[in-house]
View 1 (cartoon, rainbow, N blue to C red):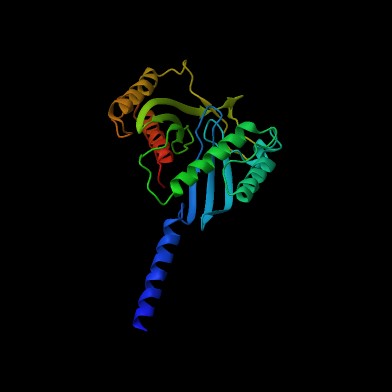
View 2: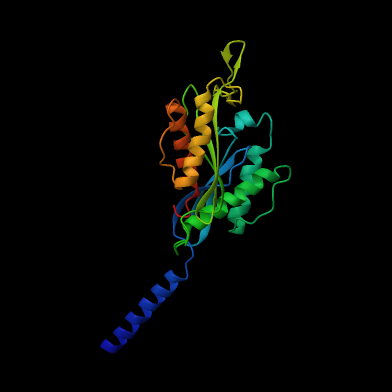
Length: 246
């Protein structure tokens, strides 16, 4: 009898171990973003259970890091809500990030699929061999009434190879700040004619320091402390999005 119990116990252990070791993904909610460009990026939250994609939540952001709310962006691109919902449904049904693009929304479709791909990468039980995903990731500093910074950080083989920085300022018309249909400030980037030399110098100096030190933890630029702090925070956010593990 004891031999039978031992055999059954061993069989149960083998079954449990074998079953768990065959799993690819951990259970839970995994959040990731697509690569970013001048048009923005997509963020997804993917719920996984027993290696099955149970749900996908999609948010899209513009090149200033502002969420594309349906009631606002839908005025310019009416199909955005349908595109997000259709893509989420297709991904769940296929249990894969590789699905057909939504007609008329190729850019959005590709970013959604890439973001889900990255979320699945972060969800893998077997640890990634790299710290970061390859690609260009967009980070945004905290929003303030005066503006915020946006960073595009490109990573290759765990190395920061490029940093592009911008800072926003409110769009003004007839002496008043322009707002969108949701009452949010409309932003523009500070151009080359922005009358503060230290600001332009800080953009170059911060990017150069990050490339040299391979970290966002660099010194602020004298004479442009506020802008420097925003740039550094935006770079930090971009690197957080780029992490291969959640």
